[in-house]
Amino acid sequence: MAAATSASITPSDPRAIPPALFNACFVLFTINAVYFPIAWFSHWWIYDPSGLGIPTDFVNVWAAGKLVLDGTPALAYDWDIQKKVEVALLGQDFVGYFAWHYPPPFLFVASFLAQFPYAVAFAGWMAVSVVPYAAVVRGIVGRPFGLVLAIAFPMVFSNTLVGQNGFLTAALVGGTLYLMPVRPVLAGVCLGLLSYKPQYGLLFPLVLIAAGHWRVFISAAATVVALAFISWLAFGIEAWKAFFHWMPTFSQAFLSDGKATWWKLQSLYSLIRFLGGPESFAWAVYWVFVASVATVLVLMWRSRVPYTLKAAALAAGTLLTTPYLFMYDMVVLAIPVAFLVRLGLQSGFRPYELPALGAALALIISFIFTGFPVGLGAILIVAGLVLRRAGSWWRREPSHALAPLGA
Image 1 (cartoon, rainbow, N blue to C red):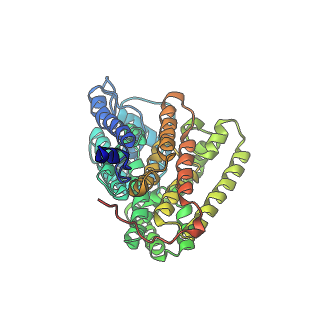
Image 2 (cartoon, helix red, strand yellow):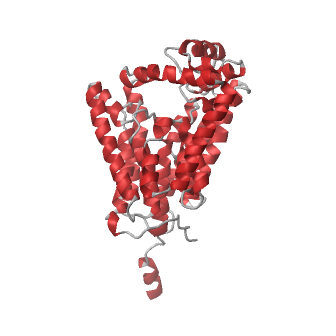
Image 3 (tube, helix red, strand yellow):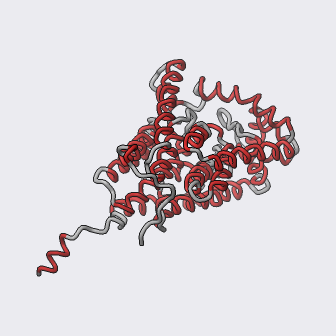
């Protein structure tokens, strides 16, 4: 009887996966894994019941690649020409544009995918790009449960539905942060490849310089230069001229005129515009916010905060400081969440952490039903959890590597 009583009051292993976390992830994992095969056979995804292509984001990737294969890569940036290729591919017209606005190095990916039939390219891009993303999340968490967490993440649904590149972006951000303490050169390569989305490059150079991670910085810079040079050889200087020529048009349409509609964007800038704030005020608030986030991150990375928390903070800060942020881009939020889960499985979750992550999840899911741009709130919740874990930064001992989880 005494032994039984003693066993009943013994604290559970803090390294065990909390049932609430596992159950929530298992349900979301199942939904994401099952929905798309059903959607394909039900003609809800890629093609509609009439056999026509459903207008969605991936069409601009395939169309840009087709123009490269036709020997005219610079025309991928011309909105009208790009749309003609897209309409011909889908077999139907659509309102607005799915414009190509990535730097020329990403044309290598587009031209490779355009060699395949549209459906094969679409589904294949999702199937292939999810692999490094899931591998990085699993590596960060340090257990097989990381694979479940990766696929369970709610933005996996948004990204897969439209055929976007959120998996690749998350894999590169997470890969950079995971490899930095142990493989700095390879981490720099990941960061250099992330230049296909330049809006994510604002904070990394500041933090790398502040923390003295020069091998990562130099490797990333060399990768960017190499990509630019190789793409210049492959696609010519005209592709780069077209990219820079059309960028102001794109910026005007999406960040001034709101052509993407403000509710679809999840940044602080877009939230202010959604609520009716004028452009000048939104930019002013946004830049003050960016400066604040950058200052916190520089101080944190120069402090004795454990590396795991520094990495989580930088991943969250990357999302907070881009004005152009769709829900599918927020697959990157899986990276700071994975670092938090790693810490929770190492030393136990604090009482408020899982409820807070549940609140962030509820915000994201509510976006489907309300169309209100709640993504910023979810990011701020995760960032707040990271800062709360960091505590008094200057009194922490340095941690230069990711400690492995116990068995």
